[in-house]
Structures are given as C-alpha cells and as structure tokens.
Image 1 (cartoon, rainbow over the protein chains, first blue to last red):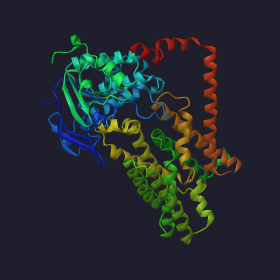
Image 2: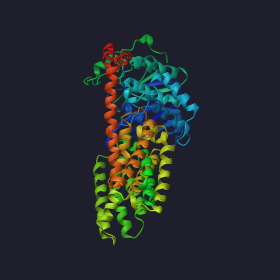
Image 3: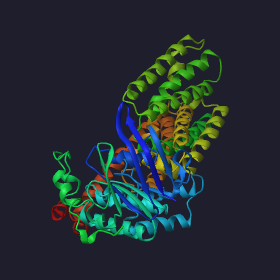
Image 4: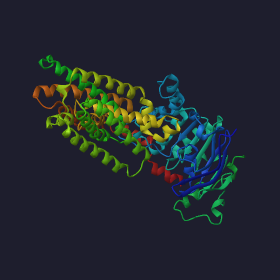
Length: 259
Length: 296
C-alpha cells in the first residue's frame, strides 16, 4: 500500500493554474524530495496533499484512504517552512513541541507522562533538550526549525512532510536536522520533503521529483550536475540559479543511494 | 474594611474579581493571535444588543449576549476567509454596532444619558444579586473552556495550519473563541463597561509577558494581575469615589508600566554584573552568517 498517491491532480488559484496533471507515489519507508525553482508549485503540491489547498481536479489518497475521508492525522507529522508569525505571547520550546501530541491524544484528554516523555525524546532527537524551558523567540532560525521537527516527531508519525526545512538554516542545525531525519528514515519512517537546496540531507533521498511550471518535469535519482539544468528551455535567469547548481545539482555519484 | 459592610460593595467586588480572572484567561489567546482589539469591536456590537433589550423591555444583558455572539461569529467567518476586505467589513460591523446601539437606546422608554453611560463605562455598584449569578455562571463556563482546552487553543492560535494538519477541529475551536469572547465582553459590561472591556483582556497579558518565558506561566501571571487590579480597583474606587471600571483599568496599566520598567532595569543590571554567561552563549551559538559563508 502506498503512503501517498496523487493522480492527475490539478490546483488553481482563481483562474491561474498552479499545478497540472500531477502524478506522484510515495511508498512506505521511501524518502522523496520535491525539487524546483521558486514559484514552480512545489510547496503548493505538498500543501495540497495535506489538504491545506483544495484540489481542482484529480485524486489524492493518504495511507490508502481518499484524502477527503482521511482521519488518522496522527500518522502524519507536518513541518512548515517557518514558525508561525511570532506573537508577543512567549511560548517555551517544550510548549510548542507538546502541540505535536494533540493529534494522538485528542483535545479533551490532559497530557500525561507518555506525552511528556515523547516531547523530551523528540527534543533530544534534534539536540535541543537543554532548551526545553527557553522561549522559542530566543532560538536561532535553525533551532526554531529543529523545534518544528521535534513537534512533528513528538506525535510519533509514520510519514513526515517537510516544507523547505533547510531554507536559511545554519550548518550546525542542518547537520542535526539531517541526523534526525536519518534516524527517522532508518526506523522505517516515510519522508516527503520540498527543498530548494538539499545540503546534508542529500544522501538520504531515494527519489527526486522536479516540479517545473506546475508539472512534473523529472522523476528519478537526485539530478546530476548536468541534469535538468542543461535541458533546453530551463530557465536559468532566476536569482538562485547559482546557489541551486552548487547545492542540489552537484550530486557526487558515489553517495547516491541505489534505489 | 468599612467599605465592604455594604452588600452592594461586596457584590461589586465579587463581580470584578470574576471578570479580573476570566478576561485575561481569554485575552491571552486573542493577544497570541494578534487580535487584541477584537474585544473592543465586539463591545461596540454588544451595545446594539443593549439597545434591543431596552427597546423590547427584555434583560439588556441577555440581548447583548445574543447580539454580540452573532457579531463575533460574523467576525470569525470574515477572518477565516482572510480577504483583504475583512478589515473594512470589521469597521462596518463595529461602527454599525455602536451607532445602532445609541439610536436604539435613544428610542427606548428608558432613554437617558446616564443609562447609556452605565453600559459604556460600567456600573459595578448597581450589580444586583441576579446579575452576579449570571456573571458567575457564564464566567466559570468561559474559564473552564479556556483552561480545559488550553493545549488545543494554544495550538490553533500559535499555528493554525499545523493544527489543521493535526486533524484538530479548527473551525469549531475558532467559533468557540468567538462565542466566549462575546460572552466575556457582555458579562464584563457591568464591571468596566463596553468601551474598557478590552483593556482587562489585554493589559494583564501585556504586563505578564514582560517577565514570563512560557505560555502557561504568562497565563497564570496575567490572571493574578487581572484579579489584583480588579480587587485593588474596586477598593480604591470606593475610597476615593472614582468610577470603578476606569480605576481597575488604570491600575492594570500601572502594573504594566511598573513591570516593564522593572524588567528593563533588571536586564540592564544583570548584563552589567555578569557578562560571562552572555559570552559563553555566544560561543555556543556562532553567528549564522559565518556558518553560511563556510558552507559556500
């Protein structure tokens, strides 16, 4: 049974088509990266899979159930691009991560010893246990991102969905992050992530999917240096082209997983 | 204290204490969601409810609850759509609410400026036994909802999309917030009045978060400050014969200023006396810019 299937999916904002005829399959224990330039529709794709953006056409199933009827949200751990707009009210790292237990526990049951243990072990996993009582506003961008991963891990999900988790994250955090994802995948977890740059998570990726102008332009191993950038018609003028070539596309073939 | 030998003063104090406890427990979620002024807006709408009640010879508190709940649900539906015109829709609703209230109160048999002032700025000392029962029952209900559903409400206010993906009943929780806001505004109408009710929801939270580190501790501290300001305000108002509602709000703002100044002074002192831990922290956490440069 597939963890996620997307067939002939289309999404539009008003009259503008954002995604067209998308087919995607994520199998259990697979690590799938969705790549693409800014504005290609890659974030919209995972937001559609999670039900945050409505489908205009096509079908999505999650763990074999049509998305519309899917209720086992505790099986999915979502890591958004960044911490929700920080309001004035302080919140500790532990309090934010504890939100990750709600899907499993339900909203009426008070948190118990199992919840506290899950929060602590998720924070230990991303190397932030020492900061459990600190306000999240005192953390660096990378540490905040790790807090969001811990929040997703605290729910003990089967599938992690991450939206550009390493964008603008410092190297120390990127490594801690890659290690946590590696352990999750190693324990049989499934990962679907959107990325602009892969960095240290690159060796984990089983399958890369490149979204270009709202369609899937490539599906397979992580693209090599001369990969999709050399294709005719690829738009080279976007400002991140240099960074992207340096970070995603220089994939040393000896590190490529045999999939 | 001599003041509290009068029954009306005891009832005034009891009503103020309940509001002082409940308003910040609700207000913290509004502040977290950057909707600090929503209570003010709902207060405007509630005035139309008061007008309806006086016109129809019904209990103004009851009709105010009904009208402000309808208004709050309307505001929530506008917010949920996230349209840019939401801002204007709110303005129309709020000013329509207060204008409607003034007109309706004027049309009623009992139209006097004193009557209008009583709802706009509170009339704590005329709180009847029956009023107090309504305040207590509704106040406890709001308090139970705010404390019992703390984690879920925190999740929704902190990151609504994440809450949605967690399968939480986001819409129901948002509507619950809207309804409890309306109820709190209406029961606080007696204490501080519709124009000052928002202050009791927001100011204790603003004061608490100057010194707290987490959401739970902010909530507790805000409730303590709210109760303290309510008790102090009623007592002071009785002693010096000022309006209790306004006195409570001024006390709360004084607490905010004192805490803000105190916290700033404490930070300066600590930085001067022990620069070492700051340096250790800097070593633990090298600037991201440097790391980014290394990466390239």
